[in-house]
Length: 184
Image (cartoon, one colour):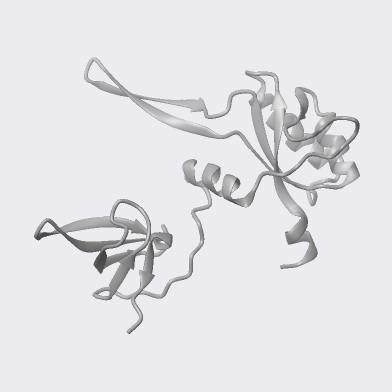
């Protein structure tokens, strides 16, 4: 990892509720117009889809997971900090203790969990498994059990495995980080 990789982090911005999309748009255009694309990398509004069954039809709606908050991935510099905190609609950084102190970034685990819940950035785990191979399941509902790989979905970072439960084989869909190879 180079120095830039080490210094980029995710921060949480507090905004006026209902202005999250406007803040995202303002921040992205300010980053471009002020030549800060190398410091202000991504702006996200965590959202989730909800499905509601009404009169036999399924209605899909999108709602904000954290109303009044926007996530920004940036390399914290005096210029980037100034541009972000002075963007219209931004009321401040979460984790800033006032008096000009720079905010604390989110922990990598927190960012990972938020991004994964949005279907973005599934955890990258390098595992070299083959169909027919036995694996140990280390987390989730099948933790502690062993399974046999039946399908590999490398683009999604998932595998399907047959797991024996209650005397019969059950298909389980598992993410790479839920399994470990069994060493002979």
